Length: 137
Image (cartoon, rainbow, N blue to C red; front, side, top):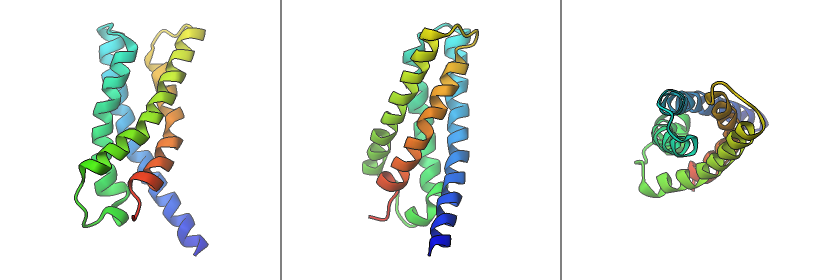
């Protein structure tokens, strides 16, 4: 029983990390283009990048990461909302870290601060997704 639980946690976390990495790549690409190249405001683009990457992540988590739980279930607006509420806390962590780094340090590429923020929100997003959004209830 304990081995099965450990395997499930490791397996789903690895998948979560892969999907999250793809989402982070999407997020950081959007952020880099619009902030570091086109000089848009960092906070606005951070939120927009979060939303776009979040849609991508929700779909991939539903069809791949948590497939054992979601198999046979259609993606629902209710779960999408739950996913967004959960990951909004991750966005809050992201924005706090982003702004702290930008306030206290001089960074040539602001995307580095954004990457730090994305990483800091990951653990919260995993636990929220696993136990709140993609659960067996």
